[in-house]
Structures are given as C-alpha cells and as structure tokens.
Length: 248
Image 1: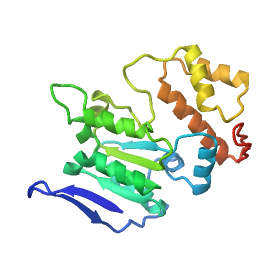
Image 2: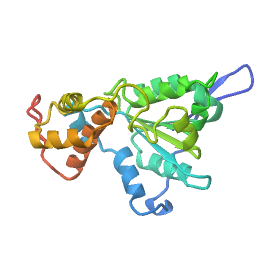
Image 3: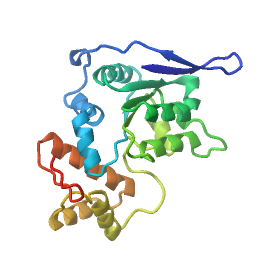
C-alpha cells in the first residue's frame, strides 16, 4: 500500500509505504445491501478476472463513494483495501492529486491494483475560466478503460458530489456522461453486439435491451454488458465464448 504526497520544499514528490488496514465486515455499518453492491463491483477474484478476459471484456472499473460529512466513505475504503489483499493499493489525496498520471502508470505496472482518490471534488475544482476540469476528464478517461486489459480499480470518495457533477463528471464512474451525441436504436444494437461479441445473444434480449436503453451513452452500453456478464458469473451461469470455445 503506497501513498503519494508533495512537500512544500521545492515541490518534492514523495512515496510512502503504509500498513494495510485490517477491518472486518462487522466494522462497517451501512444500510442493507449497500456494502454488498460495493463489494460486488470492486472485489473480484482472479478466476472472475480470467473469465472476463476470455469473454473480451475490459477490466478497469471505478466506484464513487459519496455522502454528507460524517458518511463513512473513508472507513468503507479502508475495509475494501483490507479485502483486496492481493492488490497493490495507491492512495492520492490533497496536493498529490496532481500526480494522477504517475499514480495511474504505476498502478498499471503493478496490477492487480487499486487507485484510491480521496475527495475527488478537488480534482473537479481544478479548472480555469469556468471550463470543465481537464484533470477530471483525464481521470474519467482512465476509468473508462483506455487500457481495458489493465486490472485496475478506481475508488473515489467525496462529500461534495454536486461539485463533481457540475464539473462534468458522472454521478458514479461508469454512468452516463454529459455531452456528445447519444447512439440511436441502430447504434445501440451494434454497440451491444460489439461488446458482447464473444457471447451468444438472443434476438429478443437484444431488442428488449435496445428499447430500454434509449438516451444512454456508448460507454453506458459497454458497462451494461460487462455488469450483466459479472452477474451471470456470480450466479454460476454457463457462458460460451464464440472466439475461444470457452465455458465459464
């Protein structure tokens, strides 16, 4: 577990090694179902990772934990870090947020890895002339999976989700984005078949999904396919890869 920091003295950049927290599930008190949903998205076994790669899915994912001051975002993150004992953890906060590029590059070299960004609203506020934050869009692009085969998890926290949304970010990573053309029905069907190309899809299921996703973005369709496959794997369903002749 590593922490990046910047000192006042000549802008020195520092890396510290930290002890990994050891919290149990009983130490985290959240409304029913919330922690289950977070763990399902963030904590992933090596076996499931292998299944996703064989099914042609990207590995990067992100989750934004938000709430008013006093909400246990950081406490929940500490619990997740303890669960991910086989992953490298890199923590960015405060002045070190400007080291996003270096942290992301290191995370990709030390996969599986988790990149924790505390108070992402500080990233959202890093803008000039009232334009959207370039650093925030850089972060969103990394979460969207420019290197989709990199097994990196982004865990973001903030008490000011409204600032993040106003700056052009999503309510949660992987969610709909603002701006840009939205795919029409024909484009959504092509996107669906593209991202699920290694999995047989029924025409009725494709038609129902296309009808239910009007107004979403292309990245939303990709994330929808990935999460549907994760749900199938968690339920023990058999998935057949056209490309690899693989069953998982």
